[in-house]
Length: 285
Image (cartoon, rainbow, N blue to C red):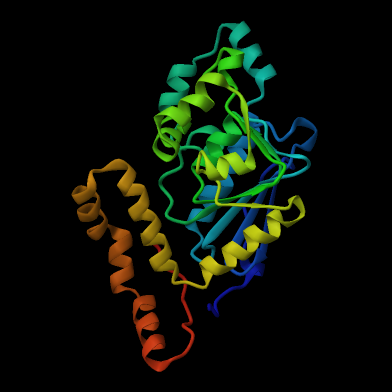
């Protein structure tokens, strides 16, 4: 456990009312997409809010895990297609360059790879398009039993281009990924867990957030240095071949912080002394 948690000293940066930021338990930040009347469709302002808040989160050593959820009956309906039509009709749309230059992807989440802190998706309702792109880049996914998932871009003449194609191909395999991407049909939460393999737990709708909070609690019971280095290793494994991934990970700054920090000593001492460890916030990189 940790003895250095004080949420009163946390002051997230300014953001619009379309994003709620809370600190429900030790070392955990909860962000809620708050456009329920629009099924939490992502706007440029909401993307900016998420980018600002997650950038701040990454810099806070006392915050170890983030949970992402939605308000109302949907998790996220993806992009605002009416706004997309307006951009297309105006002749100013520049989608190829926008996708290529987007560091963190859709909603500043779908391609976020610079953070070693775990992201948990609490999928309270249906997710479409970019909402699924966001989920595929989370580390652990809890879904409501009535949630529906779809990549319907092909039905709208657009493209799921913000990272979900390679991620889904890797997780589900080429044929199942093709089923979602080329047909554009919806799948259930059970199918997302058992066939397509991008959901960890399916629970009653009323238990989605409490389950996510319990998973986060279990994560923060472990050394934050070890957790963050483990996530970094998983991210590197997606970028490199086996041996290159091992070598790069072993020599990284995150691994150096683990091996030279206080938590490795605390964990080993706690084991020897038959007591629970008392973890410290990781040092800033």
